[in-house]
Length: 92
Image 1: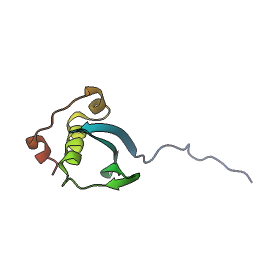
Image 2: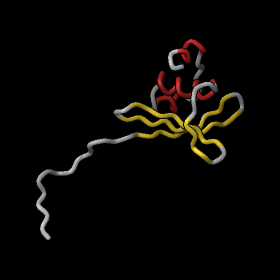
Image 3: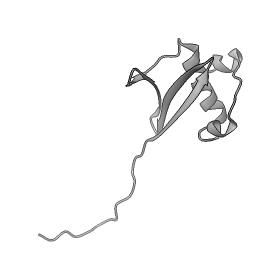
Image 4: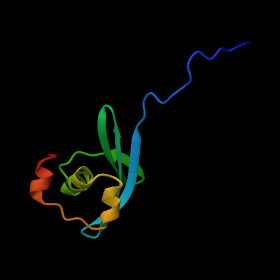
């Protein structure tokens, strides 16, 4: 069988997923944030399961807001961030 290459392969679509760990009010939270051409997704690790969460829990909203405001991996380089309610209101 002969295969003739008509066009070199290339990346057509790609999703990037960032994973990190933060501490909010003494609780460690492991998160994943993914982005692609179709938008983004936010998950937290709860009891060994990745759960897509809504932002009714302000801790998760605060993490998402920090990612949106500071970017990733820049968010991880800051080490400590104070997020205000006004900041979070933009992403509710």
